[in-house]
Image (cartoon, rainbow, N blue to C red; front, side):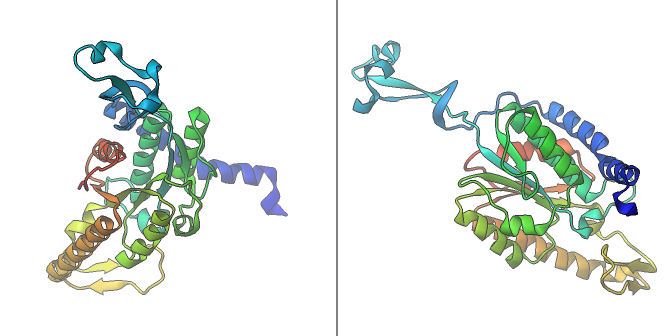
Length: 295
């Protein structure tokens, strides 16, 4: 069969992987610009970085006493270090047709999402975290291999919603889900509730193309769904619909924000006409427990 011809398969693979080098190069540049250094988790545990002194407990034993600090007062103290143990972090980039939207001179939403997640993956890799592309690369892996496998999946994988709905994740794992979140808020609430049930939690990266928020269209304009499932909408004077559209957009944005707050996930909103580094920095900071919602 022609479909199994080695030459045909190789060419198909090359076409599928074509975006990877450019996206990976941009992601590495963004990660380098963020340059956050050692990835601490800001909680006590095993590690080398000093966190705090606490009162000695009987179960600690004499070997745990910090005698220099204890000599200053009447009590025994233990020197605790910051928790730097590797966590399991799952990354997912929405591959739905709507993520293929781009205004002139700007990247596709799916490509910007991939760059942000790949840059975050690079930072997490440097911090010793175990990473995976949700539903596409299996169990989380550490080291350069884990980064390369995850980056390839984020750049070229299908990014199916089923991975979020049914994918297996380690208990208490952290996730970063990148999408335009144009599905109904109740749909996303159900997906995140399932993940919450396993003790998982994380961050939502909402990717917006400027035209979706600003609605800059005027005059005779034809609108079509990216997937081509519905008949195109033709407006004689698009500017007449601007106020009504912006109202609907604002209501949906507020609903997504409220949904994220209710399920306990951090929301980061990013427009593709702004530097990717801003989103990556917000994502990286939001990975810390207790991070507040960012926009």
